[in-house]
Image (tube, rainbow, N blue to C red):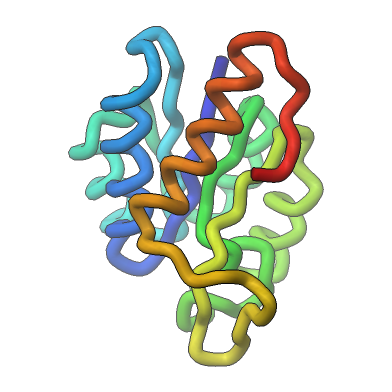
Amino acid sequence: MIIAVVDGMGGGIGAQIITQLRQELPLDVEIIALGTNAVATQRMMQARANRGASGENAILVSINLADFIIAPIGVVVPNSMMGEVTPTIATAVASARGHKLLLPINQPHFEIVGIEWKALTKQISAAIEVIRRAMEGETPSPV
């Protein structure tokens, strides 16, 4: 199983995701860190991703390798993360074959309504539970 974690800016959310994945899933799960910039990728690699790549083209080439994609919801919104998520990146992630687990994190230019606020660690745990169920043979479904 391959999980892609996509993040931008400083990579802090992606690093938290990877840290929890490493704590809660078997070590044979491959984690690919895809950063919109080198700093984000580096931080995710320090959290123990198996491999990583940075930038628009790297995301376009690598995103379809993943069975699951975990990221802040901004990765499917063009021009989010202070413009780091290009329309091409947003389209590639949204169109990727993998099951997308998007964390509802607000951005300055949009707000997610109708969703109960949860701590980031709980959001990540819910995403990991979806992956765990899939590993046990259940069909992925919303948490």
